[in-house]
Image (cartoon, rainbow, N blue to C red):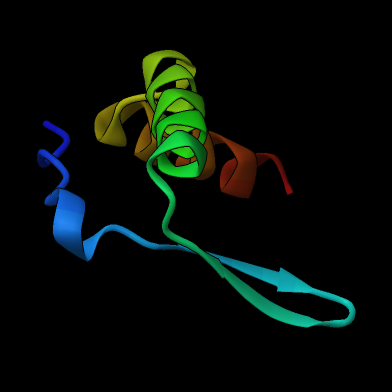
Length: 60
């Protein structure tokens, strides 16, 4: 379960080759929230991730 964002505390930190950038504009935050929702939707569950890691370790 993903916690709900607290708008006044939301910030995106981007580590870039020329330094760190912090984004806090609502439009920028919406873009990253949407991106992470999509990633979360296709990511393996914790149990399936553990099983995959264990399988890969046994195959070595």
